[in-house]
Image (cartoon, rainbow, N blue to C red; front, side):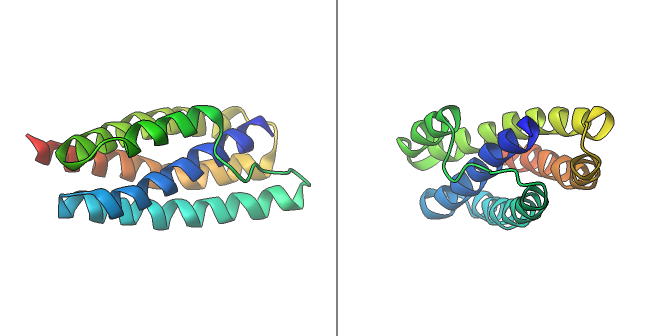
Length: 139
């Protein structure tokens, strides 16, 4: 249950940051990346929500405190500073998510969440690689 609640905060943050990048971003490749993040994480969030509902797990409807701080920090930036901070945040968030998903897929207690985590890992790894290559365009 803790895994699914933590994931809800992370997925919600990824979606909101993706929307913010699409609105405030300056580089087309970053905006395209953000659109992919918004679409993929919305899909994953809906899958998680369906699984949680079957198990009577109530997922948060708002960002957690840590996620809100990340969002506020990014929202205060503009231009290339914004783009750079967004991509750095995507790298950090996906690295952390991959670690959590690997742990859940291997050692989780709930078979449905384990299966969902394992099935979602390839997308997260793809996002991480895309974030690295997109960020490299800043140089």
